Structure formats: structure tokens, C-alpha cells
Length: 165
Ligand SMILES: [Zn+2]
Picture (cartoon, rainbow, N blue to C red):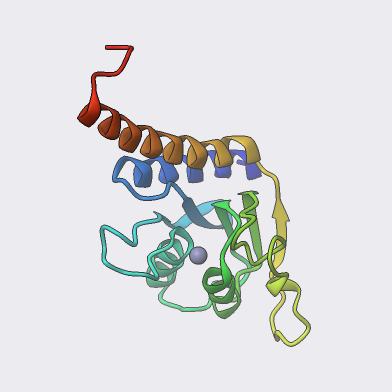
């Protein structure tokens, strides 16, 4: 299994979130070729503002090994982590994070900040981007396009039947 293989697995997790109406982001924690934890974005369904894919995967992995420190593990996530998740990666002592697509509005690794490279941190998380970036980004953009389409459709239908019908 290489980075691309693991990212495919993260994409499957992301799709599960999308099916539940959550923004489709998926993550997994891998150590020595084994998945320790995985998850997808689900703040709406779980009424939990911290329930980002990375947090879900970290919680599951830490519970599995019985240690909040996941030294040497790699976290794969389809979209660039936000500030909360980047902070959690440092607390978990994750060795490396690999993400698919950038998140221009809120990404904390390279887009809006370079938190993982900050000099004040006592732990360095190596990071890499761009693995299956197009697939990771398109999953999110298709999700939002469909949402917009649904709301436009209901607006149109309330006025008149759409031309395609
Ligand atoms: Zn996050």
C-alpha cells in the first residue's frame, strides 16, 4: 500500500460522509501498514463541532492503541486540515500528514497558515499534499453543486415546472 492506495481509502470514507449530507471529507491513521483509525466529517449528524474527519480518525486510533500519542503514524485526509485539526495532529505527535486537495478558505497547513511549520511547536509534523487532489476536491465540489442544484430546483418548481420536465 502506498500513499495513493491509502488516499483511495480516505476517499471512500469521505463518500460515506457525503451520503449522510455532511461535507465529504475522509481521514485515516496508518501505522506500520495497519489502519488504526478512520472516519469522516460528521459535525451535523453528531451535533459536535469538533467532529471533523481527522479528529474522528485520531480518536479511534488513540483508543485502539490505548495511547493519545500516535508517534510515527501517518494521517491521510482528503482535504487540507483546518487549524483545529492541525493542532490535534501536533498533540497526537503524528509523524506525517498527507492530504489531497488544498482548502483555500480555511486550510492551516499551507493555504491560510503554515501551522505545522511554526517554530514555537515542540513537535514537527511532516506534511505532503496533492495525492489524488482532483478526486478529493471534486467530491466536495460535486457535493456543493448538487446541494445548490437541489435548492434551485425547489425554487423553480415552486414558480413553474422546469423546462426539462
Ligand atoms: Zn478540521
